[in-house]
Amino acid sequence: MQTILVTGAGSGIGRATARTFLDAGWRVALAGRREAPLVETAQGNADALILPMDVTDAAALEAGFARIASDWGRLDVLFNNAGIGLRAAPIDEIALDDWRRLSAINIDGMFLCARAAFGLMRRQDPQGGRIINNGSISAHVPRWGSAPYTVSKHAVTGLTRALSLDGRRYNIACGQIDIGNALTEMVQQMTRGVPQANGEIAVEPVMDVAHVAASVLHMAELPLSANVQFMTVMATAMPFIGRG
Image (tube, rainbow, N blue to C red):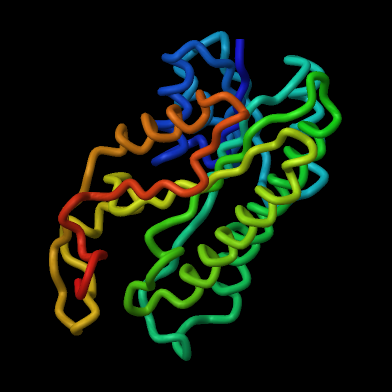
């Protein structure tokens, strides 16, 4: 039975993806800051491992990955998913504490989880595994007022490329899924109207988060001899391609 760790598994994309993998017969480690939402995600499934931990806490992460190694013997896939956004605003109106909080989760947390997974995958026998980073449409182009989030998602792309290179000799594949307007709690605002590049407020198309979960499953089920380096999954008519 294959194993995956999903960070940010207590809600949104993480919850949908975790449940999709459980339904597909995987063992799924559920990571998040609060235990109750993780238990809700698991829905009593015996193949779910609840790991309450903060992705910015390196010691907690090491303990969580050690638990996976002890209980399951190996980790086949990390879905490096945890992240947050901020209210849209010009950069000079963004509080320094908000920037630091976002960076700690979206950049440091991604790095620390990848670091721990890479180490485990490098040491396990047989060697290897797969890391799938959650990027964003913002890893390609910004939204108005999104400097911190856009910086963080460009950093994720750099991490993905570096891990893809560094992982070759250890049979560790790394890919990235860039998601646009999957309907979760975080994206509900799109259905009410959000700032556009021309200054207008407009409602944007959204898509079912199940399509994201199915895409991650596809990436994870490939043999390690094949890799989806970058995948974009988005609401078809959302403003992204061309001029908006």
